Length: 238
Ligand code: BV8
Ligand code: ZN
Image (cartoon, rainbow, N blue to C red; front, side, top):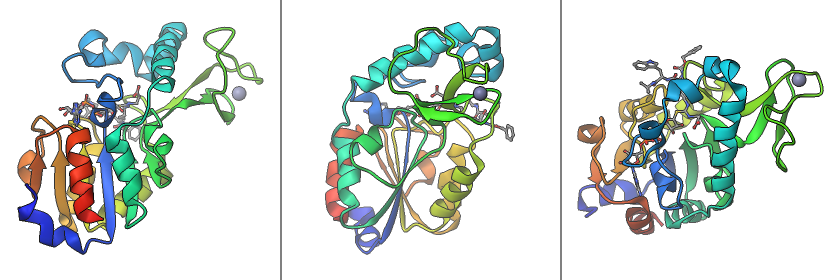
């Protein structure tokens, strides 16, 4: 399965993973655009934009609280664990669009969360930020300054955290191999990371049971689930 790239990846030092909702699908967390994906049931413009939040903060909070409970009950799968294991042998960076924190719970410690985290909150008025510990007495929860608190995630139409995005581009431009796992690459600017890597002559490998908008630009497209493909692929790199 890997003949076409095995020579080029054997001596790789720095490996970057770009991941999306698909890598957490086998941990019981729905994707967005897949068969029972969130955007099949809900309109993202009603739940994942700042306007939607100000229109109905309670509704948006109820949706994130529901997802947070589901995520806290989930466990990292063999895909997440294989990536964290590889860090024992190689310089591994994870650039994820996921807000679920499962890479970190699998033991990965170089994880850049391009779209934020569901276990963090921030104030819409002051610069208060914190991890969510328990549940909230009221929704939307209020900050000490009286401002409404919001999930510390990036909504559509909002810029990604500039320091994280800058670092993500630099990692994409300086890696030997980029493994794109479990993402449809439908959302910008995260979907430009493989392009930065390609310009740098990086080996691009896609792990996804379905084709994506960039499959033809990959050096290898493994049309398998991440729990099946990643442990095998990573054993090649170790
Ligand atoms: C911005 C956080 C500008 C919250 C998310 C029109 C055309 C083009 C672009 C735009 C446009 N209109 C607006 C835009 C820009 C927009 C965008 O790209 N929209 C898309 C939908 C067209 N982007 C933005 O708005 C970004 N901001 O551009 O700001 C700006 C600049 C300066 C100043 C001000 C503003 C912000 C984007 C971030 C939005 N937030 N999430 C939350 O999660 O609640 S995006 C959301 O989609 C998730 O984060 C998710 O990660 C991301 C991408 O989805 P995927 O992870 O890829 O999930 P998906 O379901 O699509 O695919 C899953 C894949 O896994 C599938 O391919 C499937 O086959 C595969 N799979 C399934 N099972 C498995 C598997 N793979 C392996 N194993 C399995 N078992
Ligand atoms: Zn505040």
